[in-house]
Image (cartoon, rainbow, N blue to C red; front, side):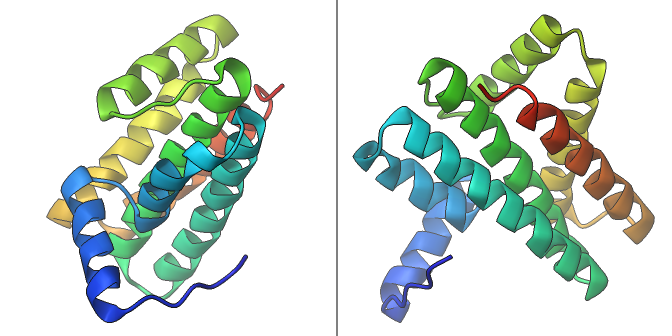
Length: 158
């Protein structure tokens, strides 16, 4: 992992745009800069970011920041799904609707309802980031379900 320092004004603007789009900062940067990479490189970059966000979610949860943990859980799932789309089909998923459709397609083809379950858990965490309703036990449960989702998606990578 490489750390990049940005001017405060640019960092604020990126954070605002990520929030407007309903994505993590990492996802925004990946989406915008991935055009410089081929699909296999994009897939690897998305996958690495997904794993990093899942680890960060664990840290946020341990520190008691349920909202940040929730958003990182969501981000990890979304980036992992995007990684699979790039790897399997060279396809960019650009909206929540496209993510849902691709997850449905993957679950159907794999005959694995747990893929949908993990995705629903991730989506609940995306909502929790904004609403803050989920108690710690629920966030922890969703983290485990998304960890399982990533394991299942890893198995679908070519």
